Length: 283
Image (cartoon, rainbow, N blue to C red; front, side):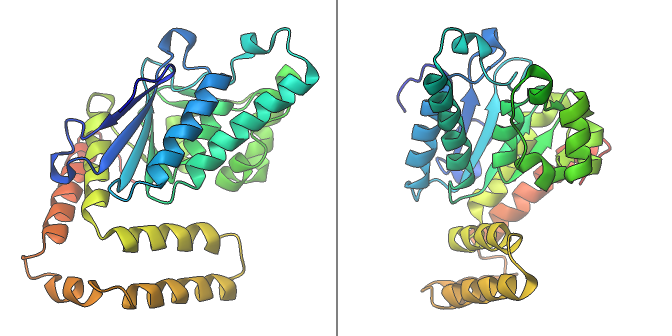
């Protein structure tokens, strides 16, 4: 893949042998700036994610960061001297980047190994779920800085009262508090975090892609509607699967020990469970 100014994009990284090339890692790569989100990173995130959305060979995406900070928020130094129109345009770029991640159309895991502040939380929450280490922390201090942000995804993740507490007071959620609030799905040991997430990604990549895509869509759309509408979405997804040419053969092989998909998935689950168990915590 091409070189990027603010990102690293890795494909077929060490640890994903069971699904070679099917797992892509997007790495925020401005460690000297604490991975602060600038306009270039917004554009590069959107470009990379849109390319991955259109690549059917990619089955799972990991979003992580280089350095001790996942993302320190927006790069406020960049805004010095900006006109009001420039600031608005910059904010729109950020919204477009978050939205692109949410709309990637395939499972996407955030690995947060350090502070995720403001825009950092938005990037992580745009992924399907967040895996964290004990070094992770989450904060949304925009209002205290005289601006507005993180007012939509955070309330949906942790509830409006905790989201307001964080926004109004600058409260920092530890990794454990974030897991208890439902923001983080699991906590893994820092030394094994990347291996654990790669094992999860391998499990996902080895599973039937259509079923994964439809399951993601059912959950994302279902939580935004009433139970009857959500059930209709799921029934349509089931019908789509039933019409797929390989549905019958996959079901016939299930549990037989002859399906590579099932074997790869079992291996991935075992690996992830082993790494997570070492930390004494699991979702």
